[in-house]
Image 1 (cartoon, rainbow, N blue to C red):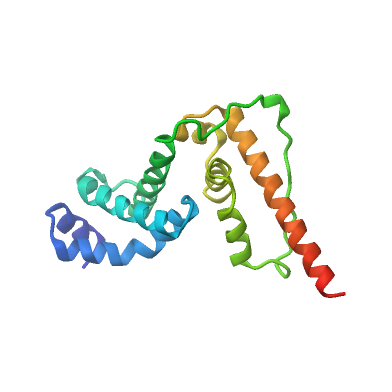
Image 2 (cartoon, rainbow, N blue to C red):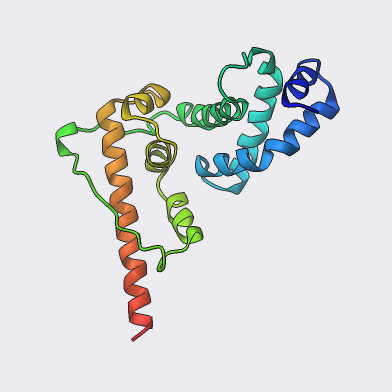
Length: 181
């Protein structure tokens, strides 16, 4: 069945089409949900909420742009909505105190699992901004609108996330070096 036919059948609330759509996109969207969630269970909840929204709003997909991109946007917005519901998740900061941090990564020393693990351990507000900016390519202005924070707060949260990640990477490398001696 073509993607257009699958979408049309989902609009008609065809359970088989919905099941096929879920099977086709669940793993990709779960990976995305995991990036924006505190843990595996929350990621599962976000995935299920995402598909509920998709099935309720699939008739609004206008066939402009990629369907997968539309699904990913819903998944990200679902996770962001949970953060918006928590008062005080994001701190207001002075933009002048922001210092940009660069992280050097040598692929031979760090596994993808390690990197994803330390990103997952970031405090919620830092992980969210880091993922939106560094992994999904959103600008600080877009992040500001998406999660209702100032551009300065977005920049600060990114800088702090990078600082934490840099520290964890340096600690990991120091442990590796001390074990090899």
